[in-house]
Length: 267
Image (cartoon, rainbow, N blue to C red; front, side, top):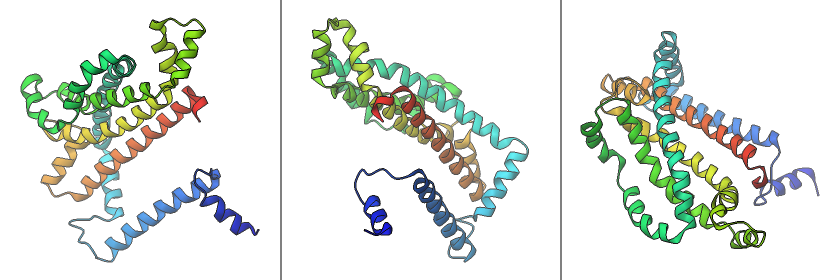
């Protein structure tokens, strides 16, 4: 079999691993295609710059806002809100989700309430949060918390329920006490899925930060987005969105590395 044919079969076989060189080449190629298409559309006048700025205009906005420190100040403000809301949510959701997924009485008590609240739109809470706790950073952190906490509980409870019963029964045979099973057997077994849950919900937290900062905020990427919209600065809007995307991508890579380090048996 020729080498090109063998390579094609490897690439089109489900779950077949690809080489690091292929990963890098494919990733760079997609970015080159997207940026090339963006440049061609804006340079060719297909879409007015009033609605779609060119890559050069977005880069110029980044340089302009970075030069006086404005961009970094807003990135820092959003980063603080997302991390505070996400950490508080995760610290509470992991134990609650594990207990809810491990004990049927807790599940029947909490699941209806959690499932009800998690379907409520976070945006509807913003006016209430402003009335209850004001317009400070607490209100923005609370938006992130409400947007991630109840989703995390459900997903972590599901990960606990997926732990093989044979593993739990084997631990009883070896002398593990019932009160130790959750933290010494179920938690380590569910850890890879829990880390995946945290990685996914951190991405949701980045999307909620725009909602949190669009109302009654004076800093952050969501704030400069709404401010740029009022001034019709489309290049700044694109810049803010790109910054959120890059920060989300960086946090995703960090969580992937964390998963590989904390749960090497699952890779």
